Structure formats: C-alpha cells, structure tokens
Length: 64
Image 1 (cartoon, helix red, strand yellow):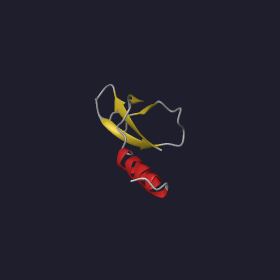
Image 2 (cartoon, helix red, strand yellow):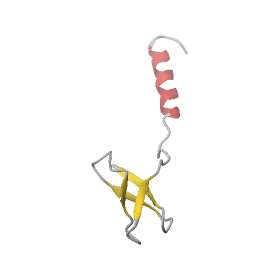
Image 3 (cartoon, one colour):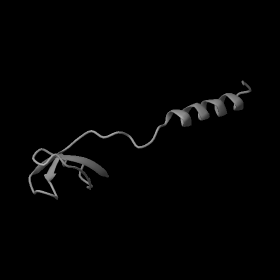
Image 4 (cartoon, one colour):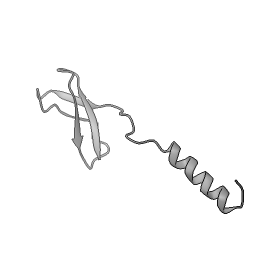
C-alpha cells in the first residue's frame, strides 16, 4: 500500500510504499527526521458506482 507521511521537522508531505499497515512512522527522505503517517483522501468515489448498481438491480427485478 502507498501511505502519505508528514515530516514534523521540515513539514514535507511524501508518499511511501510499504506492506506493513502498522508502520506509522518513518524517516523523512529529505531531512532524515521522524515523519508520521497522516490520513489521506480516497482517490476514488464509489457513489456513482453504487447508484448504477442499484439501477441495474431494480431493472433486473422489473422495476424502473
């Protein structure tokens, strides 16, 4: 997974690929100080997909 980190010293945000979900801190690649994982926005929206699926299910049941 790719996680977003923020360095508390130089305030740079960067992405890092890791297999370890529990890795909440890492060294900043720019200054070498401790950086912590921050919540990031989802890169996709499921709402249009859910609405489309609901329309297909209603059509299959004979409802419009």
